[in-house]
Each structure stands twice: as structure tokens, then as C-alpha cells.
Length: 145
Image (cartoon, rainbow, N blue to C red; front, side, top):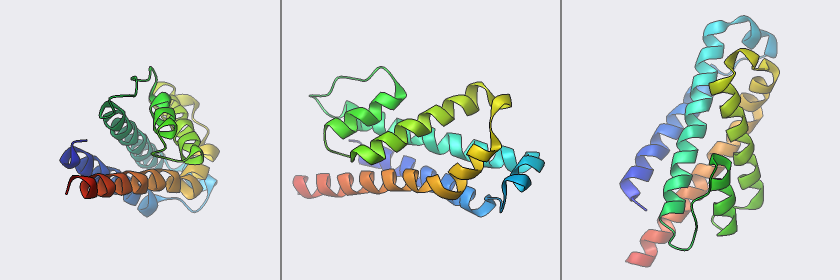
């Protein structure tokens, strides 16, 4: 893996998560009534998911014995298959791709209750993925020393 590239993407992911945490509304009603807040939260969630997919794709590409998955969600399945992330994290990351797809392609049909649930309880899924990547980078570095 290109450590510098992954570290840059991880830093961007952390900034997105920080922005979501900073702007996280206190209620669904607040989110539903504030268009600017909707945009800030949705943009940062979709960026965070896309960064995670990019990291996963790079990680998969660095494995000679893993065929390239045909879907974004498949990237996380491949990482589970290799034991790089656990099944639960893989499933949650796959689900995040579903949200990203709705947000990017069908923005007008977003259910703000779901977005509220994501920003109040599921951003830790993205943080858990980032921690798994950090661990993998550290372990990789130890093996090359």
C-alpha cells in the first residue's frame, strides 16, 4: 500500500467525521428544518464513505491474491475475506455505500431520520474502519523493518 496516499485519505476521512460531529443536530426536526445543515451533514457523510471506498480499493489492489471486486461494497467484502477487517465492520461499511448511493443519485428522496441516525450513532463505523486501516499500516511497517 502507498502509505502516504492512505494517510492523506485517512486524514480527510477524519476531517469529515469531525465536521459531522461538530454539526450533528440535536434532533431529527432540527435536521429536517435546516437545509444548510442537511447539505453539510450529507456532503461530509458521502465524502467519508467515498474516502473509505477509495482506501479499501487501494488496499485490495495491493493484494496480489485478491481479484478486484465489481462493486464498491464488494471492496469491504474482499477485506473481510482477507481478514483485514471483521465481518461486522465489513457489513456496516457495505451498508454505508448504500447510503452514499442514495445521497449521490437520489438526493431528493433522502430520509432525514436515517441521516440523523447515521450521524448520531453510525459514524463510529467509519471511525472503526479508519482504525483498522491504521492497524494494518502499522503492522505492514513492522514487517518491512
